[in-house]
Length: 213
Image 1 (cartoon, one colour):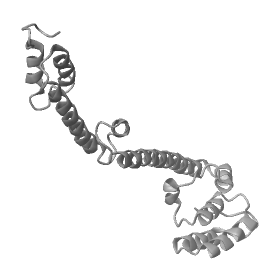
Image 2: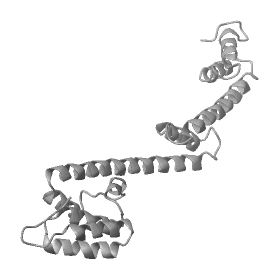
Image 3: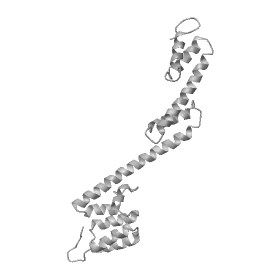
Image 4: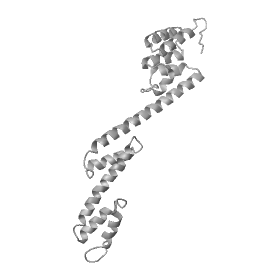
């Protein structure tokens, strides 16, 4: 966009040079040239965007959308919004909204990564350990993150193995109370191996021929 201030020097060439310096990564010269623009027209919105980009070490305005820091709170961006034409202001608002969304996603990513790393650190303990079960609960809360679902499925299988082994140990002692304990355990893992069948046996069988409730 050509910007001309009546009675003063045309700032367009200076502004173009500033943007070209940005593209080349020459932020020092970009800032120097944009200061010349602002000396002529202190209300040039594009000039403040150049200063913003230079401060953030970005080469193109589109990169503001993925900037890790919030651009809305930057004084140069505020000035650019203030002095921009309606059309250019709409463009800047889109940059701002995209930047806010990008930062929110980055924070959510960091939150999930922290939970993921912490949960994996705990999985080295025994499957019946409280810390192990807590890890599974944490991974379930981020089930769509990385391979959390696979870890949950593997951990669930390990837990079932422990429960199955504990339940079968009760079957060694032929008394009603032990069969009740076994039934309670088999009831939590009916889909594991022959747990459903063993559960039915526990309910139907005891030394006195009574049905275990």
